[in-house]
Length: 117
Image 1 (cartoon, rainbow, N blue to C red):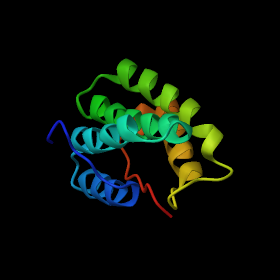
Image 2 (image 1 turned 135 degrees about the vertical axis):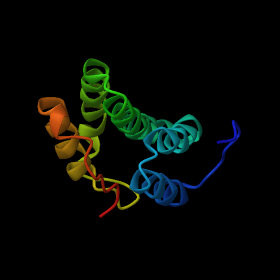
Image 3 (image 1 turned 60 degrees about the vertical axis):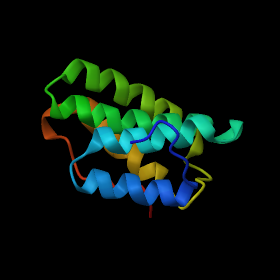
């Protein structure tokens, strides 16, 4: 991914989903991180949390269970405040639910993750 990647939120979510579906979570992380760094203050933690979910899945893929659990825990904590009014048609509740399940049972993951409803 280019360092200066610039995408609108919905475009970035579609691209991140495509990359997750192709089992390329680290690349999805890079897309989500680009939006995080460019987003408005009120959404920064949302995008940071989503990027952490993707890199947490990357750690699971690489067998780093403790690293994955730490990142996924932080990610779910960042995402929880957005559950009641999720922007961009995000399925924040579903992402948080799956993230917490992976923390509790990393042997079950990584799982298919749907970012949008």
